Length: 157
Image 1 (cartoon, one colour):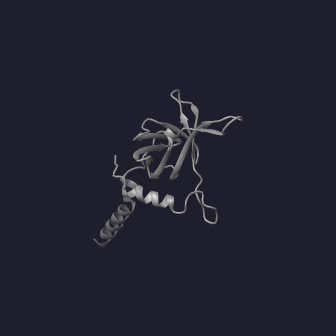
Image 2 (tube, helix red, strand yellow):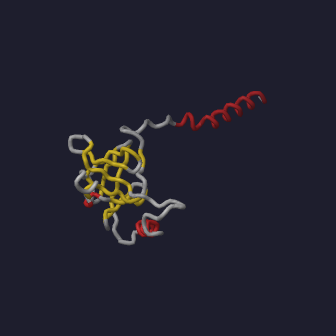
Image 3 (tube, rainbow, N blue to C red):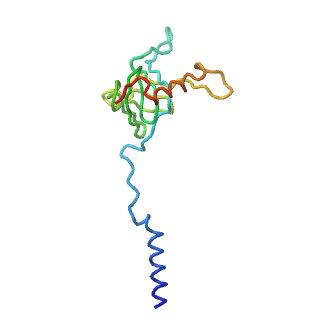
């Protein structure tokens, strides 16, 4: 009888320790790639200039600021985006429907209706780092981020 209890106890212990492995398999990967987020900061959009004029021609109506996880702002309006693999899709807000191809961290190209990369590029602005000159007024981005998170403008989706 004692042997049966020992084997029963060992069997229960092995089932308990194997429980998570038996519970469910790892979910399949997301179609199109891994989910992600863009680096926070201001993205300026422009088309290429030429040798006789400015390096880039501003497309300020497409500029946006990534404020948290999957949220962005355009002036006083908020929106959301989805990053799957290297595809950025604006899913709500003033830029809803805009699709961008992430070529590198901080460099995006607008995707044209035919699916090709267009001329419009959106570039993450330079950020201040320790022991380097500020590219913006010290503390300005942090104050703006706090205001964004607090919903200081009262806008919401």
